[in-house]
Length: 616
Image (cartoon, rainbow, N blue to C red):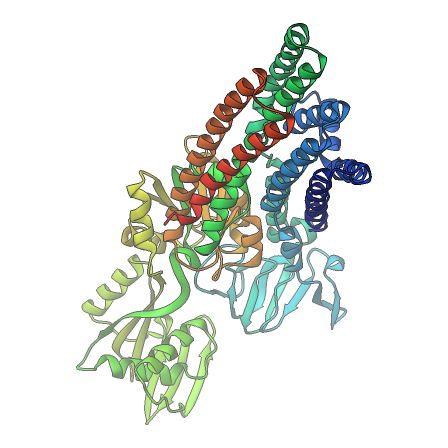
């Protein structure tokens, strides 16, 4: 940010000094003329970033716009044309200041990932519970994790029962029940219950540490796209130097020294590819401005160029295509009981439970405006379900609580629900199954429309998720993606993305920390803003500030339009230079007019790019 402020200050100073210099040059007084020259030289001196870049690139054997401008300014100063040289400095600084600001990208994704690591762990040592720095935990030790705490290590549960929210690692929409023998990941959240975990991986060996490594590795591979103007000037600069020398020589022979200098300097000034230098960054400004007004943050022109070529969009499932919260989606009733009866009995039994599934049942009861009385007895049976009593009746919740015969109809319904990727909650009253509640993650409202819009652009769609295969299959069928991949860990998602890139330009859309490696390994990473994590947003190339997935398609269309503008700008600036060079070579332009003519070319490029702001 400090560099951007410094660039803006330099631009303002150059503008003030150049304008004042021009004003004083119009006053027919020696003192004013001398001050005008000094101010123009100061303005030219403020353009030192241009000259530094020119020298640096020249040492790298690269011919760039900065080198071209430096030569034109040097020749102008030598010939005594100070104000035109200062004007060129102002125009170039304006373009580079805009470009630097646009390409400024927030940093800190790695730091945020690292901050997710718990710093301490509660370890059993010599019969006591000792809190130690996580880096001091040893393999094979027993770590104690209480409700609401993050798990500090990768390991296996040796005692206890709980539900662990491991969306940060696997992307699963529902917290996963953990009991003896189950594996857990560092950085995941223990929602309720106490767990004793045998340490199997620590520090840099944990899954979370591996995610961090994947992000770092992918960021190192990212290289900036070479500027179109720089490639053009590689061939254009030698040509202009030859042309200026030819014009000087022929004019000197036919007319004289003074006119030869005027024409040669005019050729150099009018040929300065300022409009060409602005052709891409100004179009980027227009595209980014339009996107910002529509709640889309594109992190630089490089990404606009990439987005235009996307022909496959891969979506994470949880909290991207779906809401990411368990919700009652269907209820089956038996033995003349109503849906309200089923929800009421289930809500009574689940009232004091902290399980995420219980919260979905309670939410349904509240939605139906029910008054939920307290059960007279309540007991959680780890790994099985809930047992409660109310009004002299016994209520059992959970498949493993079923010690009674179940009808063929109910059994079939449970199988169908599970095949659709839904969590089944049988409600048992006095040893009779009176109903079945199906809980599932729900599809985001605009997911289907987003997929359809992408298909209209002939873009292939895919879904990759850490969730189970049945849930993935059900969601994929409902929204109409072309293909899906399920039960993937973060590194497996990266492998899927890499394989896709063999035949496609791939965009990845995700929200969670577990999506970060896939986001940075895709050609373009889209992060869900409102629903997404800070890490994913900072890691991605494009951030959607809201949850509207149709903006993925909008961003692709906008980038394609922006790229067409870039190509138009480049073509127009070349034509403009050709006209200016012809006029300057034939003596129709003075150095001042040459500077203003190439400035007019810049203005035309800006106007063309500004039209992007009107794109809808």
